[in-house]
Amino acid sequence: MPLISVKNIEKTYVIEDVETHAVRDISLEINKGEFVAVMGPSGSGKSTLLHMLGFLDRPTGGEYRFDDRSIDEYSDDELARVRNREMGFVFQAFNLLPRTTVLENVKLPLLYADIPNEEQDTLARKAIEVVGLRDRMHHESSQLSGGEKQRVAIARALVNNPSVIFADEPTGNLDSKSGGQVMEFIEKLHADGNTILLITHETYTAEYAERIIRLKDGLIESDTKVSNRHHTKDHFVK
Image (cartoon, rainbow, N blue to C red):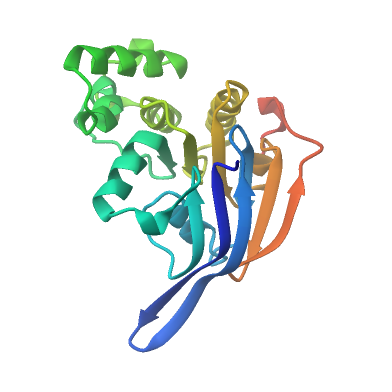
């Protein structure tokens, strides 16, 4: 059973009676443990697709089943609960609270879960250690480099042990060295059994994945397995 299954999904925005079809008639399945990259130029619909798959937005047509349950069966409150418990997000802009410590930033998703305070600390510390930032745990996020901030965002995405991690242009604001390190962490998460959906416009970033879906004008242009996957930062080129 696929973790994510969409059939003829679409998203149309209407602004002043003008319709914009951001995503049109997309059908795909993503299995548990897969590492999938979605590529395409600006305006191709890749971020819109991520927002729908990540319960951040509802489709205007088609069917979306997550873990074999239709999105239409969820209330908005249920969507928020499932999103917090089952999904982790890493964004290009990091989305960290600036005057807040690394530990407090990573604990954020746990504040909305029914988890005791002591356990929240334990889970957050473990996630921070996974991304190699134990010595930065009590630093404010504003004191970190871009690469470190993105690693904090990855730790925050991991802390709830989600079913899937959505990464939207996670290397977009980073230099090539930091970007390579971040992709190595994401690749390691996949090796540990995590399901990853990566949005990127960079070929070398996408080739860390095992499958690449290319979008154009809101449609799937191709969906292919990757044969020459990159495994070292030496291959990472911006």
